[in-house]
Amino acid sequence: MDRQQAVTEWERVRDQYEQAGLVMPGVRMFVPDEWKRSDRSIESLAMDAVGPLSTDPNSAIPTILTTAIDPDVIRILFAPLQMAEILGEERKVGDWLEETRLFPVVEDTGEVSSYGDYANSGRAGINFNYPALQSYLFQIIMNYGERETARAGLMRINYVSDLSTAAATMLNRFGNLSYAFGISGLQNYGLLNNPYLSSFLTPAVKAWGGTTWFNGTTPAATANEVYNDILAVVQKIIQQTNGAVELDSPMTLALSPQSQEAMIFANSFGVYVKNLLKEGLPNLKIKTAVQYGAQTSANSQGYSTIGNVMQIIVDKIDGQKVAYPAYNEKMRAHKIVPELSSWKQKMTAGTWGTVMRMPLGVGGMIGI
Image (cartoon, rainbow, N blue to C red):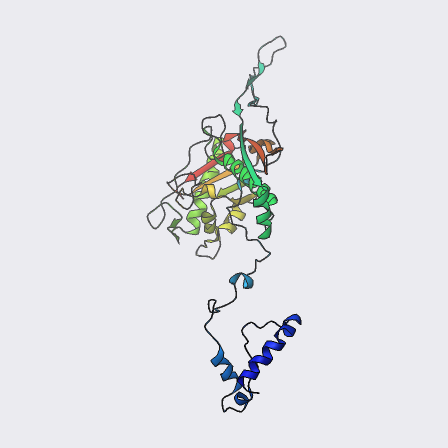
């Protein structure tokens, strides 16, 4: 058939094709016999018949179709909460209704005299006092809406559960900080700044000329010099307790993570500091917390800008615990309050800081 016949034939059968589901609005005719006999291929002839595009040229498929969300959610890392572990967070003290708690202290007093059958001299007595601590309540509020919860679900995030975890974590982190520094303006003190503690010792001058264990990140003290600094703090505790603390008494060495690296300094005989301590102080435990580090832009929770700090805390003296962190509420979850299309909930916690029962059982050194 010629070209005209090819157009006429296509017009005749086009409706039949469309009813069968084959819709080709760009086709105008069948291929004429003269084109079939042409030297050019059918493909090239068809390309000649293609008109200009009415849509943008294809570049690629939508990026979202090749994007997936990994099911494992990455959690941002925070410094570990070690202050409670250093002292042992043993128990709840009081409840959130208490604002002040008195801690009775009893001291034995008296005098003896020579014996006589009719003598009435000699006297036994006690002196008692009631030092007080004040509690501090703090709170956090979590809010979540219907749409944001649903949208978070599209990203494989359990929004409400993760909010609850974040609220509990923030309360716990603040409580941990109060164990180190207490609460300003209240009779609420931390392990590092209790006013009843003896003053920090100054490190001995090291062979390199300074007093610190590190010069930047480079070791700047020998193993023996580090050991002697620690022993000086223990010696001070023994002196201020008049021998109630001995070298084999259970105690804890608390220092910053950086300062802990000095425990693997070796002396000329290849003996590490930690091994020297194990021999000289057999019941010494080593714990770390970032609060013992120097206060810098990278460590805003550090104790002082002067330098790193260490403390020796004796576990017990005469059967009595020297110090312990105390809370009156670990976490109190209040009722969930519904709004029009959202909810909110308050969570509360409380702290007494660190209860220092026997300040003489703690000694420290600053600038190591």
